[in-house]
Image (cartoon, rainbow, N blue to C red; front, top):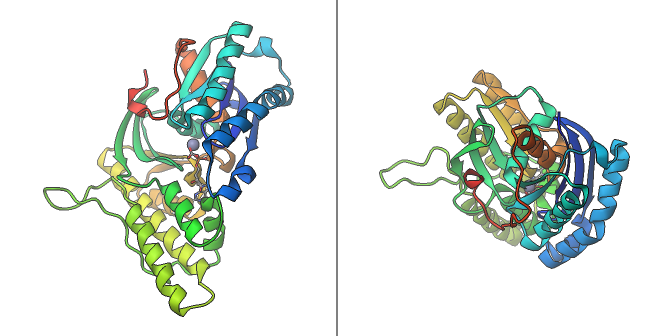
Length: 342
Ligand code: KG4
Ligand code: ZN
């Protein structure tokens, strides 16, 4: 039974959590959304500076809420890749310093491994093998989790990540940043059949389409064209119908490819991870399709879909329980394939 304090600062949330095995003792998230909103996206320099200002307070709060002290902590984890380098550096440096000062093992964690582990927080008995649909602001992948620490990417986006597409479409509709939650909410009041939009497909040289790879940039361009066309003849713009039509196309594409991939690889459990896993329509379509195909579906509760440190701590627990820790000279990296983690 390991208790880990972990830090997550890869983007715009300063997050600290304490997890005992798969039980969350505290989960502190200081969001910078309001700070970046006027810029329409995350400004890396501003993100790093705010992580620096918030991190010590978040660590104190995590210990207070968990009602434990340093002697109860077995290891200190931090996201080391991928993400904004300046932002990652704040969390990783704080974690390494604490590990040194408190004489605890340090555990450098891959951000996507954290998103995969978020499902264990809600279903502690979950065991590999399973297929994880990982959908965030920077990634869209179908990952075969073969065993703990063994990952194979079976499908991925060839252009925009799905969260990125949500954020770009939200900007077109003047819905602000981040776009995902705003589109999700608005879509629930719109007609998803109002505008037929193209689902992105990846052609194969031998003919046909890639069964599991995704593409979202064509869909984003189609929404852009639709908005321009409607602006010339309709006022006000039917933004709820556009949002619902976009969301339906995305959720259908993700669901269809995920189910095909699971069936083709004989994987009877599907998990979801990443910020877009919070999407209401995606959750409904996946729930319906997994039931129809007699597959198990496991998704994290909403607070563990978007960036948080509990998922990082949960992955770190697994590493420590297996006798692994990271060297204190481990570097942060803006990009790192999940299959390449040691
Ligand atoms: O995992 P995450 O918090 O950060 C990254 O690792 O990227 O994901 C953030 C992304 C953003 O693009 C945001 O718009 C999207 O997740 N998102 C959603 C929803 N909530 C957050 N997208 C669709 N529907 C939502 N309910
Ligand atoms: Zn994330």
